[in-house]
Length: 186
Image (cartoon, rainbow, N blue to C red; front, side, top):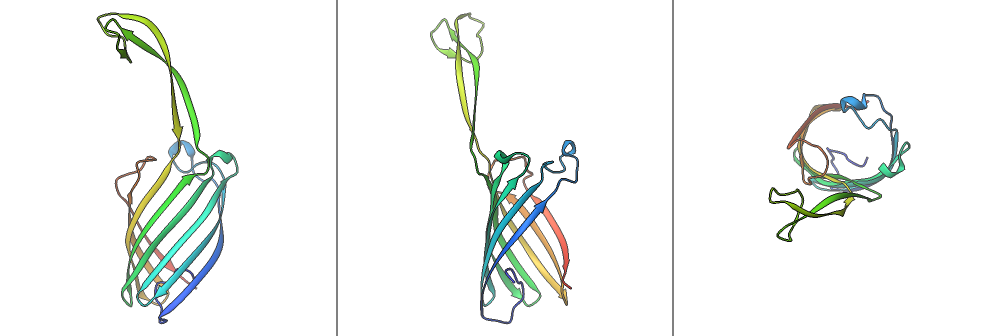
C-alpha cells in the first residue's frame, strides 16, 4: 500500500520492497529495448497527510549480460488529491550509471605556420604534425520530470495521463513523452 491514490485516513506511512525482472522481447535493432535481461530489487516509501502523498523509490538495476551497464534507479514526488476521484502528480524520475567509464582517442594535431594549434590543416600550410590524446568521461544521468493526473471514475478502475519532460541532456529522448493508461484492481 505504498502509493495509494484515495484514502480516508489523515496520516499513513508505508514501506515496501519489490523485485522487477525485465527480459528482452523486442528487436534491439529497431530500438525496442536493450536486449539484455535485468533484475531490479527496490525499496519504496510513502507518507500521506490529508490530501498529500509524498513518495520515493530507489533500486539497483543489475544487467546480467554486461555488468558495466548496471544502473541505480530512483524517483520521488508528490501526489495532491484535488477531489475524491482526481489527483495531480509531480515526480522526478531518474537513473545513473554505477560505473563511470573513461575512453580516450589519439587524434592528429596540426601546428600552423603562425605557431597556433589547429584541429584541421589550414590552407596556409602545416608544419610539424603532432598527436593529441583526448580523454572523455562516459557517464549518463537520465533525469525526467513527470507531470500528470490520475482519475478514478468508479470502483477500482484508475486512468492516468502523464507527460515526461527531460531535465538532463543525457540519452536520446524527445522533448516531451506522453503516457496514458488504465489500471484495474481485483
